[in-house]
Image 1 (tube, rainbow, N blue to C red):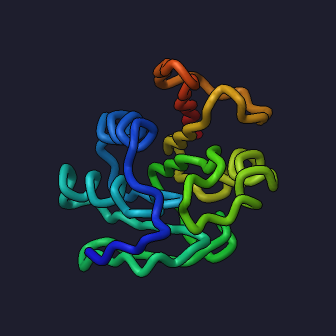
Image 2 (cartoon, helix red, strand yellow):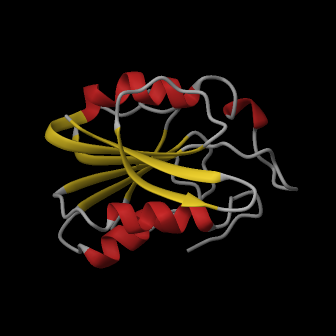
Length: 160
């Protein structure tokens, strides 16, 4: 794996989402906003037979031989359906990383919520991780919550 200085390193939010995705064994999984590829790699390591995809608006140059990658602004370049899609949405201001802050407040979370149903198979699962400051309208179930002294992380789930 090639690491790029601008990738967001796995942290508490990544590990929370990891615990959530690994609960579900599916045939096809898309890690939307994949960044470092940590979630896609973790899923493929657990479920070797799964078809795993990574998508990100920024191409960090990270590739795995057994995982597909597509450069895409959310679903712009996605032309198929998946059994599960997760999105650890951007919600932090940059901390010295070369990260496009416009992604945080351009409605990317609401766009994901509004579009994900078009890319999920019947009875498929969508998981969305945000913090308690994220403004989004959704009627999804809560899959997991973790509280930290500086924020609350929430993973929402919807079965389609």
